[in-house]
Length: 217
Image (tube, rainbow, N blue to C red; front, side):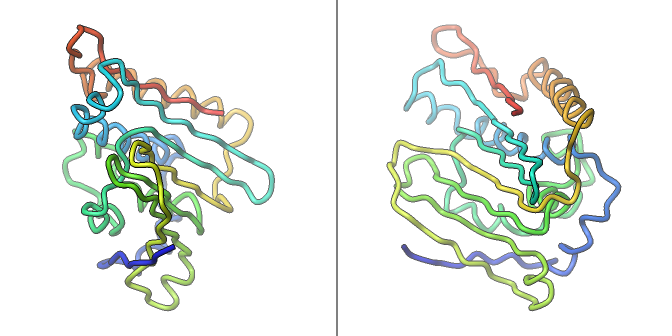
């Protein structure tokens, strides 16, 4: 297993305060779904070349409320290529223009820090025969002013591609009616995106659309 580094500057000092933002759990989860949708849109031709015109994006959200609470979000989009790691893992500023896929305002890193003090991303990019994992331990990063994180690598089948984000020891545990609200709001959010074509629903060669599904369990 090899280990490289990813630079997470600038802004590591803000990671600890992101949990105090006035935010909603369905918008935080929507940030992760947006990343999958964006990956689908950028890589639709390659994904169809591998899987055919009927390829379907699926984002699965698994919520474990037992202590310590844990949420995992997994998609079968194109994964995060090593060339994109710098952009993907730096803390993001809230964008002034929220009309596109960043409309919910935080991005993967900030949404994850709002959700949990411990989280990691495991991903395998299309055509890259390796799985890479980056782990965030927010207290250690902030206290020790850590500016680079290890990238742990393991061999993988080049045909596999996914991204899995695991949030551990959740600050805002969704229980009871909140889980129902998560399903309701995410359905509403992505119904709009499907209608507007933001889920990569360009017609396939055989006339079939490229569709997406969000599953919450």
